[in-house]
Image (cartoon, rainbow, N blue to C red):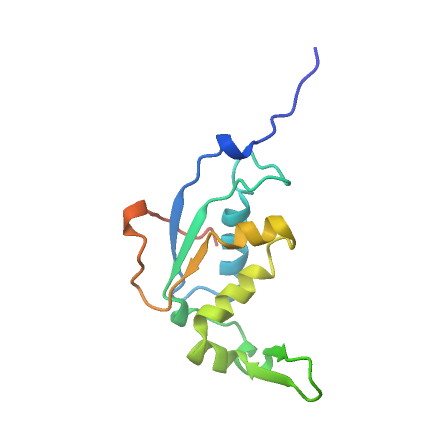
Amino acid sequence: MQRQTTMAHANTIERKWYVVDAEGKTLGRLASEVARLLTGKNKAIYTPNVDCGDYVIIINAGKVALSGDAEYKKYYYNASGYARGIRSRSAGVMKREFPVEMLERAVWGMIPKGRLGRKIYKKLFVYEGAEHKHQAQNPIAYELKY
């Protein structure tokens, strides 16, 4: 008797909505756990070429923690393409002024790149404060594993 592997199909996937509170959580650990939820790697039906992940709402992005000296030693770069068109900001500046972008960049670095990755990334919603506009979806509070 031959066993068959179950492959997920886009029309059979049930998606849930999760709310993750970032207050006091370390940036990298938070981002890796959120990336697992977005890609669907926490499900038994995970299939690499199908988007089988869930929707994730991150609240309190401004209160995320950075480990060690990351606030002073970690830098984020943007290049315009022109000569001397590079801009660098420390993680401390990003945390104070652009906490949503900092979390989005961390999660984006941990999901696959390409068409599927862009589709997965659209299921992420990050908010600086404790309020979000997705109450109608009845999101489930998700407690991180670490």
